[in-house]
Each structure stands twice: as structure tokens, then as C-alpha cells.
Length: 201
Picture (tube, rainbow, N blue to C red):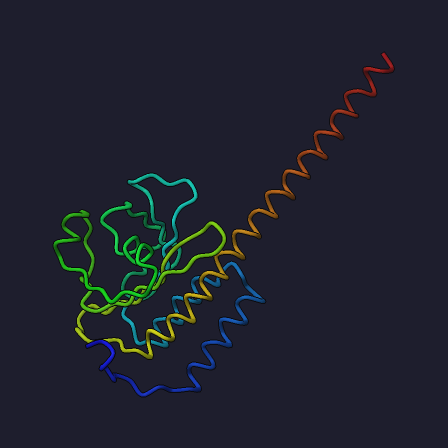
């Protein structure tokens, strides 16, 4: 049924501009790339909400997924953490392919969260090195909001998400290594400053 959907007339110029915006973000402001991605997902697919979830490095069953970027109606859930189960993200990664999904009020009641229900959504898995996650778009009223072209566009954006997360993790490691090297240099310098007077004594 999803494959039969033909919901949109694509504006190629808008899609190209969206890709240019993402490419510029990678070069000029890599810290914002994930937010730019979800903003692009809302714009390019006509979504009501979009987001990126990442499996946390130090995770527990209660705090397993981290929403590192959100846009649209769910923008207020930025940095939310979710349990391992129940989770559409987990199912998507277990199956290893895009998922069409809906979320009823019962789920939010179970989670103790007040949020608009999901009447139509696409969830895509991505993975890079040791990090896994998902990219998703949602509609909060339309029962048929997305089609195959949206799924293909989201696959491109999911690849961007994997690259963006990998780039941010690499930058973080480099900064930590630089900080560790600077701390070692400071400790070495301090040791010399202490040692010189001691030697003269």
C-alpha cells in the first residue's frame, strides 16, 4: 500500500538547495549539522516533526536512546532519553531497514509523556563505526503523509546523519586528546618548576 502512494510533486530546485545547505553546514559549522539535517527533513518531506536518535555510549535499559536533534512539533524533545524497550528505533535497527510506523496515545500513556500522536511516519536505521541510530519523520494528523520519494530522500539524509555523527565523535576524541596532551604538558612544566628549586636546595 505504501508503494502505491503518490502524494507529492517534487521541486528539484528545493531539493538541490537543501543538499547545498547540508554540504555548507558540514564545512562551515559541523556542530550544527545534525540540526540542519532534521530541519531539511521537515522541509524536503513536508513532515510535522523530524529527529535523530543515537544509541548512547554509556547506556542502560532505562536510558538507551538519545534524541540528539529534533525539529517541528517534536523540537521540544531535544536531548530526550528513551528506554531500550518499547522503542520503534530498536525495532528499526533490529530489522535493518526502513519502517513505516504509527504511535498511538497508549504508547505515550505507557511512557508518561504528553506528545502529539504519530499518524504516519518513516524511520530509517543508520550505523557508523560503533555508533547506531535512526532518523525519523512524522505526521501528527495526516494518515498518509509520506510516499516512496520521501523514503528515498530520507535514505540520503540517513547517510548524512551517519557521517555527521561520526564527524562529531571524531572531533570530540581529537579535542579530548588535545586536552590530555595540554594537561600532560602543564603537569610536566609544573614538575620542572617544582623540581628546579628542590635541586638547588
